[in-house]
Length: 345
Image (tube, one colour):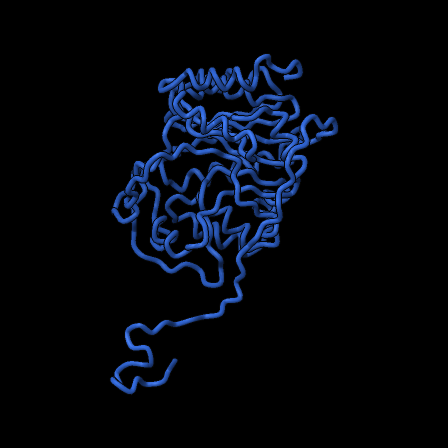
């Protein structure tokens, strides 16, 4: 309203309560319903490329995760943080016995919030596309702290019924709050294994920014588009996210929501994450960003009801599991899902 207020000509109508309304034409995205499993289907034909981003020294847990996931028709791409030599040696030993397991020698320091995690994922996807003997329908990224909470058969059936979908967890509808919370309105640079805040910035106009969790399940077609396309959307967003805090939590979401693949978006990253408390995450406003402390809790036997309740939900992985915190809950999961192990694994 541009009419002057009769009581005070300094204001337009409405005074300090006036609002500006804009019609953007942006409709709320509603994903088509996913197709759920019909147990025991015999014609399932789906292959998964797992990207395992590992660090630390929990090699036994890494072997255990691999054993739970392994099948001959899946591929495994392993990246070990360049500071984790013990884990890297263990991963190389693991890969020696399998033709479908690859350990990259292009290693990066995947610091919290750093741009290198996105670099690792894009590098892994490019290598997986070019592996001549690795044919896959979906790519799933996991860490050594993830663990399956449903069987391989259940996951394969679900993905087979939903081929072409892209599974990512979005922050919701309050985009402005997400931008501020993530520090997307600031420029960051990773240098000397730190994330440095350089200053404020303007994000590209006309682009729907989205984001959420950096644990994703992406279709082969979408990954090929991200890696191989000459689309200016891809090249422009790559440059933006090169100087972004937590880029892996937003890059794929934003590309997906602004591309022809948008209808394939499904607001579910197939993970159950054990969040128990809200922590103040304001490190994006510091000059040096190392870690905000915003990490999920480890599952313990006390959380079993939460895990058991996922039976009827489309959730296939849990986060976080650490044997040094609770080996008992991992043993219980194995007994529930994988005992006895399938003969064809």
